[in-house]
Image (cartoon, rainbow, N blue to C red):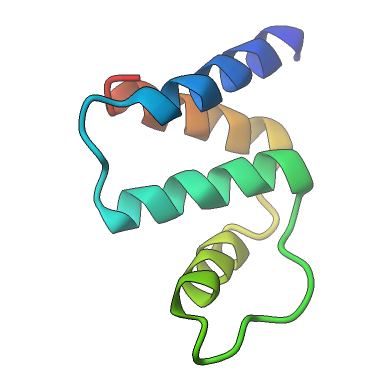
Length: 85
């Protein structure tokens, strides 16, 4: 677990310095996996219709509800590595 957590933290730092900005779908996936790994399942109310960004982020996070913390961390690390981070 400690090794995965270290890898996850390194990937989170590397994600801020990617050579090219990922497309929006990939950014949403990164966000959702990060939130699932650090906070668990999405909670609270879905943002309103006028908050397009907040709504998209919430929906992406809610879509992976139930994903285990370790699995979310590993998928996040794998995705950042695939993006060159």
